[in-house]
Amino acid sequence: MSENHITNLLDAKPFSDLNEEEISTVRSHVITCFECRSAYESAKITSSLLEARTSETVEAGPFFKTRVMAEIRARRLASEEPALMRMWKSARALVTTMALLLVVLAGITIFTRATDPQEAALVGPSMYSPEYVVLARGDSDDDLTNYQVLETIYDPEDSDGQ
Amino acid sequence: MSLAREGNERAFEEIVCRYSPRVFRIASRFFRQPAAVEDAAQESFLKAYTQLSSFEGRGSLEGWLSRITANQCINMLRHAKRRPEAAVSELTDHDGPWLENQLGGLSAERHEAGQRSMVAADIAEKVLSELSPEDRMVLMSIDGERLPVKDVAEMTGWSESKVKVRAFRARRRMREAVENLLRRTRKTGSEEGRKDE
Image 1 (cartoon, chains in turn blue, brown):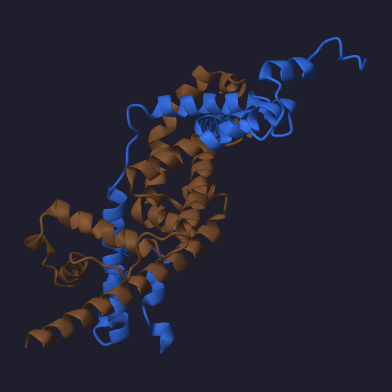
Image 2: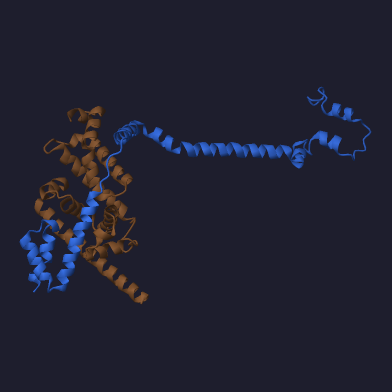
């Protein structure tokens, strides 16, 4: 039975290329064969769909040629550039951002240290320095004046150990 | 041609001007969006520019360019198929009535010609997107554009008998896809009719 079906005939060539004899064969068959009738209807619709889709064509825009030639030049330039330069070009933004971030962080660190009073106090004379021991500590029972103390400490004649 | 092969840009510009319509027509069989068609055409010309030295001049330049374009479009479509935009299951409100009208032969009275054609092209695109890029190209070329099998064979690099076999199978697949679509449309229509009652 299957050899009498007309589906092979429908699929063998474009629907619109079927000649009159083939169409009459198809029509007489689909009267009794429900399966082939459905195939015949689908083939007709398929033909209309393809016709509609083919009628839609996009045309080249006025700047298409310019666009193609610009792309050709850009690709040629890209291939001529040394590899290091290409790497730098792609990493430039990242490196710049990181450098800027570093500068900003350093600035913030310096600024906060300078404005913090506790930090500033720490930056002053060390608690182990002679100045601190003599001048800052108020518990010295020595009667020497500050000037005499400093003179004693920094006496140039005494600096060689004599 | 020899100037273009030596890297003369002016000569290649001339090639772009002369063969753009052909390249765009081929790309239009694969893509519908103007931007996609233009991208495919541009990539085809860029590929042609880089491969100019391999063109031996045995066939026509037009045939060579057509083959590059077809291959380029097939590759792009394969890539795009991984991210499908629309499927047959996603029919719009207009698609069902269009199919019904086609069956009833009432489309001419009910719809404006332009709109009718656009809806048909929409459905065609959805059905075609279910086929492989090669099947699509063969169908669009032979059944849609009425190109001779010989031209399609030249464009694809296949033998004529392979093109015929491919066209036969593609036609069957598309017909079956439309058949399924019709079945679904009728089913939906009868369900809605029952709801109305």
